[in-house]
Every structure is written in structure tokens, then in C-alpha cells.
Length: 330
Image 1 (cartoon, one colour):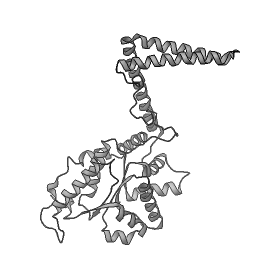
Image 2 (cartoon, helix red, strand yellow):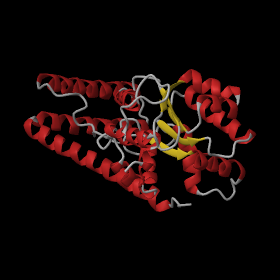
Image 3 (cartoon, helix red, strand yellow):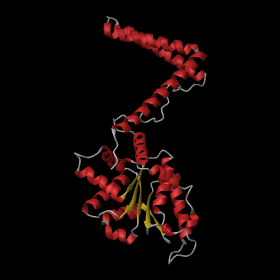
Image 4 (cartoon, rainbow, N blue to C red):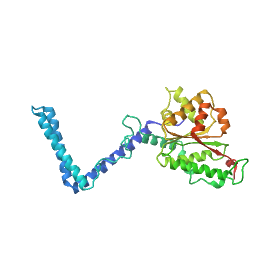
């Protein structure tokens, strides 16, 4: 198993530091330009600072008439602030013009929110590193909507299906593209089901690539690796790797979790309970999930508990993949 070391976290934090420095530098340049055009604003800033210093000195010295002096200084400061506001309005300057403009307004490019939890933008950077380390980046460059070829699917009737495989894939493609286009506006989950070699994993990769380019955090896990991560977290906490801890947290926190090849894991009471927990928790927090499986709907019902299948059948759009195995086409 690959290892996430402290260097990766440090690299992410270094990038945040650079972003903050750039935001501060850009703010300084805007201030220099603004004060050059309107010198009175610079004078007001200096005067407010001097008055604030005098106010602090008063509190330290505690003279007999402190209340009178404090009120006078505060009134002077307020007059200067009103004058500054008027100058801003007269010159059509936004009130936050001199405030550093951070890429992430949630954490101000620190990586952490006000409650000391990792910001979602931090999680996205971690997932990008995970994709890079797993060589998924190169795979997604090959398997995306731009490289998707509808013509590999037969346009001949297939068994008792109402649509030909190609017509069906037009429908799957439309739903998948709409899923990406309206990711933040709908609460949709997808279930890809059908035999092997029919394009389910390819379509998962298409969606992953599209959303990653939109700066949406996507975690791809095969069913086997998903439960391996959960098992290591539950039963090997003392020896658990940093990567496993991050992976486990991302299972619940990422914007989109893709579970590929559901049904290939060893199904037992533990995996059933954990699968329900993952699906249920992500539904509660309105995080989206895509499940891909070679099992039919009937096999899913026979393999997993009623609680799991009820969640899937009632909250996922089922998209069936069918036709001849594409892996053996020349």
C-alpha cells in the first residue's frame, strides 16, 4: 500500500502560505495605488492608528478623567471612519477593496475552518494527491467524456431490452452529463449495474474527471479497497497508516464517493453493516454517491440486507448497462 507522508501535507501547507502571501502582496499593491490617487485616505489611516495608540495608553495609565478622554478619542476615530467611508463612496470603491482576496473564503487559504477542522479545499488537495499517487490521473486523461465513443455500442436489438445498447448508452450518457452539470443543484445518486465489460467503470471515470476539473472532491474506491480501508481503521488503529486515516475520513467527507465493483468483496455482517453506515451517513449529510456493480438488481437484493437495498433502490437512479462485452471487440 502506498504511503502518504508528512511531506505531502507540508507541500499543501506551503502552497497555502504562498497563496496568502500573494493575497497580502496584491492588497498592498492596491493600497499603494489607491493612496497615491487619494492621499487623504493615507492620512486618515495614520491618524486612526495614532488615536488608537493614545486610546491604549489611556487604559494603561488610568487617569482620573479617563471616561471623558476615551469618549473623545472614540468620537474622533468614528469621524475619521465616516470620512473614509464617504471618500470610498464618492470614488465608487468597494469597502473591502484593501482586504486580501483569498481563493477560499471559508478558511482564508489557511486549510482550516474556524472550528479547527480541515477545510473542504484542503480535502480536495489531498484527494488530488491520492489520484496522482495512484496513477489515476493518467487513466482519467484516457477515459473521459471527450474520449467516450458511443459507436462502440451496438445499435442492434439486444435480447428483450426495449432500447438497443447504443440507444441505452445515449440515455446513460445524458444522465451522467446532467449529473456533472447540476452537481450542486440536485441531490442525485447513481447506480450503474450490468455485466462485465460494458463501460460502467469507464463512465465512472468520465464523471470523476469532469468533476475534478470543477474542483469538486471525488474519491474513487473499488469495493475491495473500500472495505479494506474501513477494516484497517476499525481493527488496526494503533498501526493504521496516515493514508488509511485520510482515506477513511474522505469516504464520508468527499463531495462524491464512487464505489466500483460492489459485490466483489467478501460479503458478511461486517461489510453489510459498514456499507449501510457509509450510504446512510452520506445521505444524511447530502453527499453524493455512485455505485457500480456487476450484479443485477435481483442479485443485489439477495446479497445485501433490506436496509441497504432499500436505501439504494429508493435514493439512487438505476442505470442498466447491457450488450456484448466490449473488452473482446477488435
